[in-house]
Image (cartoon, rainbow, N blue to C red; front, side):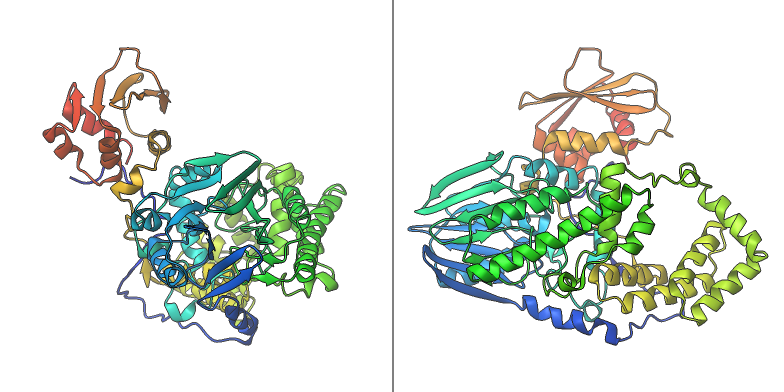
Length: 573
Protein backbone atom coordinates (compact mmCIF):
# COMPACT_ATOMS: atom_id res chain seq x y z
CA UNK A 1 0.00 0.00 0.00
CA UNK A 2 1.40 3.41 -0.94
CA UNK A 3 1.73 6.01 1.76
CA UNK A 4 -1.37 8.13 2.08
CA UNK A 5 0.50 10.98 3.67
CA UNK A 6 4.23 11.51 3.32
CA UNK A 7 5.58 13.35 6.32
CA UNK A 8 9.35 13.11 6.53
CA UNK A 9 11.26 14.56 9.42
CA UNK A 10 14.51 14.71 7.49
CA UNK A 11 16.10 18.10 7.06
CA UNK A 12 17.40 17.33 3.61
CA UNK A 13 16.37 15.58 0.42
CA UNK A 14 18.53 12.76 -0.83
CA UNK A 15 18.94 13.19 -4.55
CA UNK A 16 19.57 10.26 -6.82
CA UNK A 17 22.06 10.41 -9.63
CA UNK A 18 20.34 9.94 -12.95
CA UNK A 19 21.37 9.53 -16.55
CA UNK A 20 20.31 12.40 -18.78
CA UNK A 21 19.88 12.77 -22.52
CA UNK A 22 21.12 16.35 -22.24
CA UNK A 23 24.53 16.67 -23.87
CA UNK A 24 25.28 19.83 -21.92
CA UNK A 25 27.85 18.76 -19.35
CA UNK A 26 28.27 20.66 -16.11
CA UNK A 27 31.83 21.55 -15.29
CA UNK A 28 32.45 23.73 -12.24
CA UNK A 29 35.46 25.96 -12.98
CA UNK A 30 38.07 26.84 -10.38
CA UNK A 31 38.16 30.60 -9.94
CA UNK A 32 40.37 32.99 -8.02
CA UNK A 33 37.28 34.58 -6.46
CA UNK A 34 36.88 31.63 -4.06
CA UNK A 35 40.46 31.49 -2.77
CA UNK A 36 39.45 33.18 0.49
CA UNK A 37 36.63 30.66 0.92
CA UNK A 38 39.09 27.79 0.41
CA UNK A 39 41.38 29.34 3.03
CA UNK A 40 38.40 29.66 5.38
CA UNK A 41 38.11 25.84 5.46
CA UNK A 42 41.06 25.83 7.87
CA UNK A 43 38.69 27.32 10.44
CA UNK A 44 37.02 23.94 10.94
CA UNK A 45 39.55 21.23 10.24
CA UNK A 46 38.32 18.06 11.95
CA UNK A 47 39.79 17.62 15.43
CA UNK A 48 39.10 17.61 19.15
CA UNK A 49 40.69 20.47 21.07
CA UNK A 50 41.13 20.22 24.85
CA UNK A 51 41.44 23.05 27.37
CA UNK A 52 42.42 23.09 31.04
CA UNK A 53 40.25 25.91 32.37
CA UNK A 54 40.20 27.14 36.00
CA UNK A 55 37.11 25.01 36.62
CA UNK A 56 38.17 21.84 34.84
CA UNK A 57 38.65 20.32 31.43
CA UNK A 58 36.59 21.22 28.37
CA UNK A 59 36.81 19.33 25.08
CA UNK A 60 35.77 20.92 21.79
CA UNK A 61 34.92 18.83 18.69
CA UNK A 62 35.10 20.80 15.44
CA UNK A 63 34.79 19.79 11.78
CA UNK A 64 32.28 16.97 12.35
CA UNK A 65 29.37 18.04 10.18
CA UNK A 66 28.44 21.67 10.67
CA UNK A 67 28.06 22.39 14.38
CA UNK A 68 30.66 21.95 17.10
CA UNK A 69 30.03 19.72 20.11
CA UNK A 70 31.46 20.56 23.52
CA UNK A 71 32.06 18.20 26.45
CA UNK A 72 32.56 19.56 29.97
CA UNK A 73 34.10 17.15 32.47
CA UNK A 74 32.36 16.80 35.85
CA UNK A 75 33.15 14.83 38.99
CA UNK A 76 31.56 11.52 38.01
CA UNK A 77 29.90 12.46 34.76
CA UNK A 78 30.11 14.87 31.86
CA UNK A 79 27.90 17.33 29.99
CA UNK A 80 27.47 17.69 26.23
CA UNK A 81 26.63 21.12 24.82
CA UNK A 82 25.11 20.71 21.33
CA UNK A 83 24.78 17.16 20.07
CA UNK A 84 25.97 17.47 16.42
CA UNK A 85 23.93 17.27 13.23
CA UNK A 86 23.43 13.51 13.13
CA UNK A 87 23.73 10.28 15.07
CA UNK A 88 26.51 9.42 12.60
CA UNK A 89 28.62 12.45 13.62
CA UNK A 90 27.72 12.13 17.33
CA UNK A 91 29.10 8.59 17.40
CA UNK A 92 32.41 9.72 15.90
CA UNK A 93 32.64 12.64 18.29
CA UNK A 94 31.83 10.60 21.39
CA UNK A 95 34.41 7.96 20.54
CA UNK A 96 37.04 10.73 20.70
CA UNK A 97 35.52 12.38 23.77
CA UNK A 98 35.60 8.98 25.54
CA UNK A 99 39.33 8.77 24.98
CA UNK A 100 39.63 12.00 26.95
CA UNK A 101 37.21 11.00 29.70
CA UNK A 102 34.82 8.03 29.59
CA UNK A 103 32.56 9.03 32.47
CA UNK A 104 28.86 8.82 31.59
CA UNK A 105 27.03 11.71 29.93
CA UNK A 106 24.68 13.18 32.52
CA UNK A 107 23.14 15.99 30.49
CA UNK A 108 22.82 17.36 26.98
CA UNK A 109 22.19 21.06 26.45
CA UNK A 110 20.72 22.39 23.20
CA UNK A 111 21.75 25.99 22.56
CA UNK A 112 18.82 26.25 20.11
CA UNK A 113 16.50 24.27 17.87
CA UNK A 114 18.48 23.85 14.64
CA UNK A 115 19.02 20.25 13.54
CA UNK A 116 22.80 20.58 13.40
CA UNK A 117 22.72 21.06 17.19
CA UNK A 118 20.01 18.54 18.11
CA UNK A 119 19.81 15.66 15.63
CA UNK A 120 22.67 13.67 17.16
CA UNK A 121 21.18 13.48 20.66
CA UNK A 122 19.67 10.00 20.25
CA UNK A 123 23.15 8.50 20.06
CA UNK A 124 23.97 9.71 23.57
CA UNK A 125 20.64 8.49 24.90
CA UNK A 126 21.18 5.01 23.45
CA UNK A 127 24.86 4.74 24.40
CA UNK A 128 24.38 5.58 28.09
CA UNK A 129 23.08 3.28 30.82
CA UNK A 130 20.91 6.10 32.13
CA UNK A 131 19.16 8.64 29.91
CA UNK A 132 20.92 12.01 30.11
CA UNK A 133 18.93 15.05 31.12
CA UNK A 134 18.00 17.05 27.98
CA UNK A 135 18.03 20.80 28.66
CA UNK A 136 16.84 23.61 26.39
CA UNK A 137 14.82 26.81 26.24
CA UNK A 138 11.07 26.34 26.64
CA UNK A 139 10.44 27.29 22.98
CA UNK A 140 13.02 24.95 21.45
CA UNK A 141 10.70 21.98 21.00
CA UNK A 142 8.04 24.21 19.41
CA UNK A 143 10.46 25.32 16.69
CA UNK A 144 11.77 21.79 16.11
CA UNK A 145 8.22 20.51 15.69
CA UNK A 146 7.47 23.38 13.29
CA UNK A 147 10.42 22.61 11.04
CA UNK A 148 9.82 18.85 11.12
CA UNK A 149 6.11 19.42 10.52
CA UNK A 150 4.31 21.95 8.38
CA UNK A 151 7.41 23.61 6.87
CA UNK A 152 9.40 20.45 6.20
CA UNK A 153 8.97 20.18 2.41
CA UNK A 154 10.01 23.73 1.51
CA UNK A 155 12.74 24.04 4.15
CA UNK A 156 14.08 20.67 3.02
CA UNK A 157 14.41 21.62 -0.65
CA UNK A 158 15.86 25.08 0.04
CA UNK A 159 18.29 23.71 2.64
CA UNK A 160 19.49 21.13 0.14
CA UNK A 161 20.43 23.90 -2.28
CA UNK A 162 21.93 26.20 0.35
CA UNK A 163 24.16 23.52 1.89
CA UNK A 164 25.00 21.86 -1.45
CA UNK A 165 24.06 18.45 -0.10
CA UNK A 166 23.41 16.96 -3.53
CA UNK A 167 26.49 18.45 -5.21
CA UNK A 168 29.53 16.29 -5.99
CA UNK A 169 31.80 16.36 -2.96
CA UNK A 170 34.61 17.96 -4.97
CA UNK A 171 32.44 20.98 -5.76
CA UNK A 172 31.53 21.79 -2.14
CA UNK A 173 34.29 23.95 -0.67
CA UNK A 174 32.53 24.35 2.67
CA UNK A 175 29.24 25.73 3.99
CA UNK A 176 30.68 28.81 5.69
CA UNK A 177 30.32 27.67 9.30
CA UNK A 178 31.47 24.08 8.86
CA UNK A 179 32.75 21.64 6.23
CA UNK A 180 29.41 20.04 5.29
CA UNK A 181 26.00 19.03 6.57
CA UNK A 182 25.74 15.39 7.61
CA UNK A 183 22.11 14.99 8.67
CA UNK A 184 21.35 12.60 5.80
CA UNK A 185 23.92 10.05 6.99
CA UNK A 186 21.70 8.53 9.68
CA UNK A 187 18.15 8.54 11.06
CA UNK A 188 17.12 11.79 12.70
CA UNK A 189 18.19 11.63 16.35
CA UNK A 190 16.21 14.45 17.92
CA UNK A 191 15.21 13.88 21.55
CA UNK A 192 12.63 16.15 23.13
CA UNK A 193 13.95 18.26 26.08
CA UNK A 194 12.80 17.22 29.55
CA UNK A 195 14.15 20.31 31.37
CA UNK A 196 13.23 23.74 30.03
CA UNK A 197 13.31 27.33 31.21
CA UNK A 198 12.14 30.79 30.18
CA UNK A 199 14.81 33.36 31.09
CA UNK A 200 17.46 31.98 33.44
CA UNK A 201 18.32 28.51 34.71
CA UNK A 202 21.07 27.88 37.26
CA UNK A 203 21.99 24.34 38.23
CA UNK A 204 24.83 22.10 39.33
CA UNK A 205 25.47 18.84 37.50
CA UNK A 206 28.31 16.61 38.72
CA UNK A 207 29.98 19.61 40.38
CA UNK A 208 29.72 21.74 37.23
CA UNK A 209 28.11 25.08 37.98
CA UNK A 210 25.95 26.07 35.04
CA UNK A 211 24.10 29.27 34.24
CA UNK A 212 21.82 29.27 31.19
CA UNK A 213 20.41 32.52 29.80
CA UNK A 214 17.83 33.16 27.11
CA UNK A 215 19.64 35.13 24.39
CA UNK A 216 17.53 35.76 21.25
CA UNK A 217 19.64 36.13 18.14
CA UNK A 218 20.03 33.65 15.30
CA UNK A 219 16.90 32.00 16.70
CA UNK A 220 14.23 33.16 19.11
CA UNK A 221 14.97 30.24 21.46
CA UNK A 222 18.75 30.79 21.47
CA UNK A 223 20.53 30.49 24.83
CA UNK A 224 24.08 30.91 26.00
CA UNK A 225 25.81 28.82 28.67
CA UNK A 226 28.06 30.42 31.28
CA UNK A 227 30.36 28.30 33.46
CA UNK A 228 31.48 30.70 36.22
CA UNK A 229 34.20 28.44 37.67
CA UNK A 230 35.59 27.72 34.20
CA UNK A 231 35.36 31.38 33.07
CA UNK A 232 33.93 29.85 29.90
CA UNK A 233 31.01 30.95 27.77
CA UNK A 234 29.20 28.99 25.06
CA UNK A 235 27.33 31.54 22.89
CA UNK A 236 25.57 29.07 20.61
CA UNK A 237 25.13 30.67 17.20
CA UNK A 238 25.19 34.29 18.34
CA UNK A 239 28.81 34.67 17.26
CA UNK A 240 31.04 32.71 14.85
CA UNK A 241 33.88 33.65 12.53
CA UNK A 242 31.86 34.97 9.59
CA UNK A 243 29.27 37.68 9.05
CA UNK A 244 26.14 36.44 10.85
CA UNK A 245 23.10 35.03 9.12
CA UNK A 246 20.75 37.85 10.10
CA UNK A 247 18.67 36.22 7.37
CA UNK A 248 19.11 32.74 5.92
CA UNK A 249 18.17 32.02 2.32
CA UNK A 250 16.77 28.61 3.23
CA UNK A 251 13.98 30.55 4.95
CA UNK A 252 13.30 31.52 8.55
CA UNK A 253 11.05 33.51 10.81
CA UNK A 254 12.25 37.08 11.35
CA UNK A 255 15.45 37.16 13.37
CA UNK A 256 15.37 39.74 16.13
CA UNK A 257 18.42 41.80 15.20
CA UNK A 258 18.01 44.26 18.08
CA UNK A 259 17.66 41.32 20.47
CA UNK A 260 20.83 39.81 18.99
CA UNK A 261 22.76 42.97 19.85
CA UNK A 262 21.37 42.95 23.40
CA UNK A 263 22.31 39.28 23.80
CA UNK A 264 25.93 39.94 22.86
CA UNK A 265 26.02 42.89 25.27
CA UNK A 266 24.77 40.52 27.98
CA UNK A 267 27.50 37.99 27.18
CA UNK A 268 30.16 40.68 27.43
CA UNK A 269 29.25 41.41 31.07
CA UNK A 270 30.63 38.04 32.18
CA UNK A 271 34.10 38.87 30.82
CA UNK A 272 34.80 35.28 29.72
CA UNK A 273 38.34 34.01 29.30
CA UNK A 274 37.20 31.16 27.03
CA UNK A 275 34.57 31.46 24.30
CA UNK A 276 33.40 28.23 22.69
CA UNK A 277 31.09 29.04 19.75
CA UNK A 278 28.93 26.39 18.14
CA UNK A 279 30.62 27.11 14.79
CA UNK A 280 34.27 27.89 13.97
CA UNK A 281 37.17 27.83 16.43
CA UNK A 282 37.27 28.88 20.10
CA UNK A 283 38.41 32.35 21.08
CA UNK A 284 40.81 32.43 24.03
CA UNK A 285 41.75 35.40 26.24
CA UNK A 286 39.58 38.01 27.94
CA UNK A 287 40.67 40.98 25.81
CA UNK A 288 40.55 39.03 22.55
CA UNK A 289 37.03 37.85 23.34
CA UNK A 290 35.84 41.35 24.28
CA UNK A 291 37.25 42.75 21.04
CA UNK A 292 35.54 40.04 18.99
CA UNK A 293 32.21 40.53 20.74
CA UNK A 294 32.48 44.31 20.36
CA UNK A 295 33.13 44.34 16.64
CA UNK A 296 30.52 41.64 16.01
CA UNK A 297 27.73 43.45 17.87
CA UNK A 298 28.78 46.81 16.38
CA UNK A 299 28.55 45.39 12.86
CA UNK A 300 25.07 44.08 13.56
CA UNK A 301 24.00 47.40 15.08
CA UNK A 302 25.44 49.34 12.15
CA UNK A 303 23.40 47.33 9.63
CA UNK A 304 20.30 47.61 11.82
CA UNK A 305 20.55 51.32 12.49
CA UNK A 306 21.44 52.37 8.95
CA UNK A 307 18.63 50.27 7.51
CA UNK A 308 16.15 51.91 9.88
CA UNK A 309 17.55 55.38 9.10
CA UNK A 310 17.06 54.92 5.37
CA UNK A 311 13.69 53.23 5.84
CA UNK A 312 12.52 56.36 7.64
CA UNK A 313 13.66 58.42 4.66
CA UNK A 314 11.26 56.42 2.48
CA UNK A 315 13.82 54.36 0.59
CA UNK A 316 12.82 50.95 -0.73
CA UNK A 317 14.57 47.75 0.48
CA UNK A 318 16.49 47.21 -2.77
CA UNK A 319 17.70 50.81 -2.65
CA UNK A 320 18.83 50.44 0.96
CA UNK A 321 20.62 47.18 0.16
CA UNK A 322 22.59 49.02 -2.55
CA UNK A 323 23.58 51.82 -0.14
CA UNK A 324 24.39 50.17 3.20
CA UNK A 325 27.95 48.89 3.44
CA UNK A 326 29.98 48.12 6.54
CA UNK A 327 32.62 50.74 7.39
CA UNK A 328 36.11 49.68 6.30
CA UNK A 329 37.37 49.23 9.87
CA UNK A 330 34.53 46.81 10.62
CA UNK A 331 34.36 45.04 7.26
CA UNK A 332 38.03 44.03 7.44
CA UNK A 333 37.55 42.10 10.68
CA UNK A 334 38.15 38.36 10.14
CA UNK A 335 34.92 37.77 12.07
CA UNK A 336 32.87 39.59 9.45
CA UNK A 337 33.80 38.18 6.05
CA UNK A 338 30.60 37.24 4.23
CA UNK A 339 31.13 33.48 4.36
CA UNK A 340 27.62 32.87 5.70
CA UNK A 341 25.31 35.88 5.94
CA UNK A 342 25.59 39.01 3.80
CA UNK A 343 24.90 42.68 4.42
CA UNK A 344 22.47 42.99 1.51
CA UNK A 345 20.33 40.00 2.56
CA UNK A 346 20.33 41.33 6.12
CA UNK A 347 19.09 44.75 5.06
CA UNK A 348 16.10 43.26 3.24
CA UNK A 349 15.25 41.04 6.21
CA UNK A 350 15.41 43.94 8.67
CA UNK A 351 13.11 45.99 6.41
CA UNK A 352 10.66 43.09 6.17
CA UNK A 353 10.84 42.46 9.91
CA UNK A 354 9.74 46.01 10.71
CA UNK A 355 7.44 46.87 7.79
CA UNK A 356 6.52 43.57 6.11
CA UNK A 357 6.80 42.58 2.45
CA UNK A 358 5.38 45.79 0.93
CA UNK A 359 8.23 48.09 -0.11
CA UNK A 360 6.05 51.19 -0.01
CA UNK A 361 6.19 51.66 -3.78
CA UNK A 362 2.56 51.73 -5.03
CA UNK A 363 3.55 49.96 -8.25
CA UNK A 364 4.58 46.94 -6.17
CA UNK A 365 1.40 46.61 -4.13
CA UNK A 366 -0.50 44.59 -6.76
CA UNK A 367 2.08 44.02 -9.52
CA UNK A 368 1.48 42.28 -12.82
CA UNK A 369 1.62 38.50 -12.70
CA UNK A 370 4.90 36.92 -13.75
CA UNK A 371 3.39 35.84 -17.04
CA UNK A 372 1.78 39.21 -17.79
CA UNK A 373 5.02 41.03 -17.05
CA UNK A 374 6.91 38.58 -19.27
CA UNK A 375 4.48 39.29 -22.12
CA UNK A 376 5.09 43.03 -21.77
CA UNK A 377 8.89 42.58 -21.61
CA UNK A 378 8.77 40.37 -24.69
CA UNK A 379 6.79 43.05 -26.51
CA UNK A 380 9.33 45.69 -25.50
CA UNK A 381 12.15 43.48 -26.76
CA UNK A 382 10.44 43.08 -30.11
CA UNK A 383 8.95 39.63 -29.58
CA UNK A 384 9.96 36.28 -28.15
CA UNK A 385 12.71 35.71 -30.70
CA UNK A 386 14.33 39.02 -29.78
CA UNK A 387 13.96 38.22 -26.07
CA UNK A 388 15.84 34.98 -26.68
CA UNK A 389 18.47 36.87 -28.63
CA UNK A 390 18.91 39.26 -25.69
CA UNK A 391 19.45 36.22 -23.45
CA UNK A 392 22.10 34.82 -25.81
CA UNK A 393 23.86 38.19 -25.87
CA UNK A 394 23.77 38.54 -22.05
CA UNK A 395 25.41 35.13 -21.64
CA UNK A 396 28.00 35.91 -24.29
CA UNK A 397 28.87 39.16 -22.50
CA UNK A 398 28.96 37.41 -19.09
CA UNK A 399 26.09 39.60 -17.90
CA UNK A 400 24.83 36.62 -15.99
CA UNK A 401 22.43 38.13 -13.44
CA UNK A 402 20.58 39.81 -16.32
CA UNK A 403 20.69 36.50 -18.19
CA UNK A 404 18.99 34.77 -15.26
CA UNK A 405 16.26 37.42 -15.16
CA UNK A 406 15.73 37.20 -18.93
CA UNK A 407 15.44 33.43 -18.70
CA UNK A 408 12.79 33.93 -15.99
CA UNK A 409 10.66 35.79 -18.54
CA UNK A 410 11.05 33.06 -21.15
CA UNK A 411 10.14 30.40 -18.59
CA UNK A 412 7.00 32.36 -17.67
CA UNK A 413 6.10 32.42 -21.38
CA UNK A 414 6.36 28.60 -21.55
CA UNK A 415 9.45 28.93 -23.73
CA UNK A 416 11.78 26.86 -21.57
CA UNK A 417 13.48 25.20 -24.52
CA UNK A 418 16.69 23.16 -24.32
CA UNK A 419 18.61 26.25 -25.43
CA UNK A 420 17.06 28.47 -22.75
CA UNK A 421 17.80 25.79 -20.15
CA UNK A 422 21.43 25.52 -21.23
CA UNK A 423 21.86 29.30 -21.16
CA UNK A 424 20.30 29.47 -17.69
CA UNK A 425 22.56 26.66 -16.47
CA UNK A 426 25.59 28.50 -17.86
CA UNK A 427 24.55 31.66 -16.00
CA UNK A 428 24.00 29.75 -12.76
CA UNK A 429 27.38 28.03 -13.00
CA UNK A 430 29.16 31.28 -13.80
CA UNK A 431 27.61 33.18 -10.88
CA UNK A 432 27.80 30.30 -8.41
CA UNK A 433 31.39 29.30 -9.11
CA UNK A 434 32.57 32.88 -8.55
CA UNK A 435 30.77 33.47 -5.29
CA UNK A 436 32.86 33.38 -2.11
CA UNK A 437 29.62 33.11 -0.12
CA UNK A 438 28.96 29.36 0.12
CA UNK A 439 25.21 29.81 0.63
CA UNK A 440 24.91 31.56 -2.72
CA UNK A 441 27.51 29.33 -4.39
CA UNK A 442 25.83 26.10 -3.32
CA UNK A 443 22.32 27.35 -4.09
CA UNK A 444 23.24 28.40 -7.63
CA UNK A 445 25.30 25.30 -8.43
CA UNK A 446 22.65 22.94 -7.06
CA UNK A 447 19.98 24.74 -9.10
CA UNK A 448 22.13 24.20 -12.21
CA UNK A 449 22.58 20.50 -11.47
CA UNK A 450 18.83 20.12 -10.91
CA UNK A 451 18.05 21.73 -14.26
CA UNK A 452 20.49 19.49 -16.07
CA UNK A 453 18.95 16.36 -14.61
CA UNK A 454 22.21 15.30 -12.97
CA UNK A 455 20.36 15.30 -9.67
CA UNK A 456 16.67 14.71 -9.58
CA UNK A 457 14.23 15.28 -6.77
CA UNK A 458 12.90 11.77 -7.13
CA UNK A 459 13.34 10.25 -3.71
CA UNK A 460 12.94 11.61 -0.25
CA UNK A 461 15.21 9.85 2.17
CA UNK A 462 12.78 8.90 4.90
CA UNK A 463 14.88 9.16 8.03
CA UNK A 464 11.88 8.87 10.32
CA UNK A 465 12.20 6.09 12.87
CA UNK A 466 9.81 4.76 15.49
CA UNK A 467 12.15 6.14 18.16
CA UNK A 468 11.88 9.62 16.65
CA UNK A 469 8.08 9.43 16.54
CA UNK A 470 7.98 9.28 20.33
CA UNK A 471 9.44 12.80 20.31
CA UNK A 472 7.07 14.16 17.68
CA UNK A 473 3.86 15.60 19.08
CA UNK A 474 0.57 14.21 17.80
CA UNK A 475 -0.47 17.89 17.52
CA UNK A 476 2.37 18.39 15.02
CA UNK A 477 1.07 15.59 12.83
CA UNK A 478 -2.47 16.93 12.85
CA UNK A 479 -1.15 20.39 11.96
CA UNK A 480 0.62 18.78 9.03
CA UNK A 481 -2.57 17.02 7.99
CA UNK A 482 -4.50 20.29 7.81
CA UNK A 483 -1.84 21.91 5.62
CA UNK A 484 -1.71 18.89 3.25
CA UNK A 485 -5.45 18.84 2.57
CA UNK A 486 -6.13 19.50 -1.10
CA UNK A 487 -9.28 21.69 -1.41
CA UNK A 488 -9.70 20.61 -5.02
CA UNK A 489 -10.61 17.12 -3.81
CA UNK A 490 -14.36 16.51 -3.61
CA UNK A 491 -15.67 15.80 -0.14
CA UNK A 492 -18.95 16.28 1.67
CA UNK A 493 -19.16 19.48 3.70
CA UNK A 494 -19.09 18.93 7.49
CA UNK A 495 -17.74 15.40 7.08
CA UNK A 496 -16.14 14.50 10.40
CA UNK A 497 -13.57 11.88 11.38
CA UNK A 498 -12.87 11.46 15.09
CA UNK A 499 -9.72 10.01 16.63
CA UNK A 500 -9.47 8.56 20.13
CA UNK A 501 -6.05 7.61 21.45
CA UNK A 502 -5.29 5.39 24.43
CA UNK A 503 -3.29 8.28 25.94
CA UNK A 504 -6.61 10.07 26.47
CA UNK A 505 -6.01 12.59 23.67
CA UNK A 506 -8.98 13.08 21.36
CA UNK A 507 -8.93 14.80 17.98
CA UNK A 508 -11.30 15.30 15.14
CA UNK A 509 -11.00 16.54 11.57
CA UNK A 510 -14.01 18.20 10.01
CA UNK A 511 -13.99 18.98 6.30
CA UNK A 512 -15.83 22.31 6.17
CA UNK A 513 -15.75 25.03 3.51
CA UNK A 514 -12.80 23.32 1.78
CA UNK A 515 -10.79 23.43 5.04
CA UNK A 516 -9.66 20.57 7.26
CA UNK A 517 -10.66 21.92 10.67
CA UNK A 518 -8.81 20.31 13.58
CA UNK A 519 -10.25 20.32 17.09
CA UNK A 520 -9.52 18.53 20.34
CA UNK A 521 -12.92 17.25 21.36
CA UNK A 522 -15.34 14.62 20.13
CA UNK A 523 -19.01 15.55 20.36
CA UNK A 524 -20.35 12.21 19.16
CA UNK A 525 -21.45 13.33 15.70
CA UNK A 526 -18.74 11.46 13.83
CA UNK A 527 -18.99 9.94 10.37
CA UNK A 528 -16.02 7.74 11.27
CA UNK A 529 -14.28 7.02 14.55
CA UNK A 530 -10.67 5.82 14.74
CA UNK A 531 -9.30 4.16 17.88
CA UNK A 532 -5.56 3.63 18.16
CA UNK A 533 -2.37 4.02 20.13
CA UNK A 534 -0.70 7.36 19.30
CA UNK A 535 2.46 5.67 18.07
CA UNK A 536 0.50 3.39 15.73
CA UNK A 537 -1.30 6.29 14.09
CA UNK A 538 1.99 8.21 13.79
CA UNK A 539 3.44 5.19 11.99
CA UNK A 540 0.46 5.21 9.63
CA UNK A 541 0.90 8.86 8.75
CA UNK A 542 4.65 8.66 8.21
CA UNK A 543 4.53 5.48 6.15
CA UNK A 544 6.29 3.26 8.67
CA UNK A 545 3.18 1.09 8.67
CA UNK A 546 0.48 0.45 6.10
CA UNK A 547 -2.99 1.59 7.20
CA UNK A 548 -4.47 -1.53 5.56
CA UNK A 549 -2.17 -3.79 7.58
CA UNK A 550 -2.88 -1.87 10.77
CA UNK A 551 -6.62 -2.15 10.27
CA UNK A 552 -6.28 -5.88 9.58
CA UNK A 553 -4.13 -6.41 12.70
CA UNK A 554 -6.44 -4.37 14.94
CA UNK A 555 -3.77 -1.80 15.76
CA UNK A 556 -6.06 0.73 14.15
CA UNK A 557 -9.81 0.26 14.74
CA UNK A 558 -12.27 1.96 12.40
CA UNK A 559 -15.82 2.36 13.62
CA UNK A 560 -17.52 2.77 10.28
CA UNK A 561 -16.32 1.98 6.78
CA UNK A 562 -12.62 1.11 6.54
CA UNK A 563 -12.57 1.82 2.81
CA UNK A 564 -14.14 5.22 3.46
CA UNK A 565 -11.35 5.98 5.93
CA UNK A 566 -8.70 5.04 3.37
CA UNK A 567 -10.38 7.34 0.85
CA UNK A 568 -10.38 10.08 3.50
CA UNK A 569 -6.64 9.69 4.08
CA UNK A 570 -6.02 9.88 0.34
CA UNK A 571 -7.28 13.48 0.35
CA UNK A 572 -4.15 14.45 2.29
CA UNK A 573 -1.57 13.14 -0.15
